[in-house]
Length: 279
Image (cartoon, rainbow, N blue to C red; front, side, top):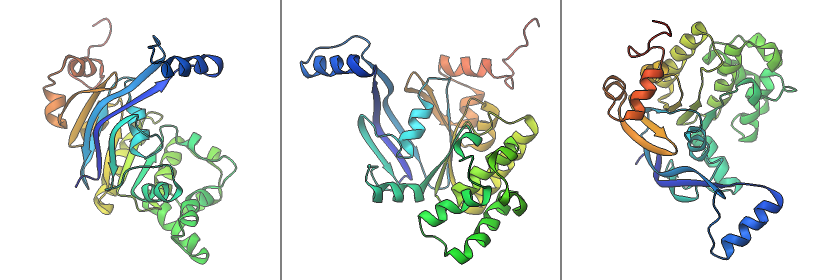
């Protein structure tokens, strides 16, 4: 059974607040179509991730990557289709949300922005342990120290605030916090977008090591094809909410079949097809 499975999943967002939304609902109740009244973010998505597997999801901004990631973590519910996460269908009740949090964790694109600026590093890492009652109070500091060490952070950082961390340290901190729940799947939304080349290389090495040590599955959501190439075995290419190509990462990125995938490759600075302006 797949760890994460999308079966014909679609997501449609209604546009317009207030009066416009009320008019939209009245038109829909009357069975009338309202042009431009809804935005289809995903359309009939089929996707699977097995336990321990690393999968990439690539596409331009607005293609539907973040919406798919939100549905995969249970933060959003699909408009139609079926989602199964570790054998369960997401819901909004507290028990289901707690169960899903134990199975899947999301590494946000803006690592620093996902942290409470008033909460010290050690408290941020300990918070999921307390909420899910995974460690007694007297053992929290020991667990926090172990989690920080697992991502290459010194325990002395536990007393600092998020604004006192570098971008790479903040990214490692949110990974440590995610690992606290011992998830089976990490969804990384543009994990290296705010990092320089050196920090990005270090992050890639960390993710590879953590995957081996903890038998983690990954969904790497990224523009950076070099990062996806290094971290994943399979890849999905999404365009305007539709999966247009999928297959082994090496095969898709070396011989892309869909025109959109070829355009992504041509726009990638690490691709042989990319040429500097003026050359």
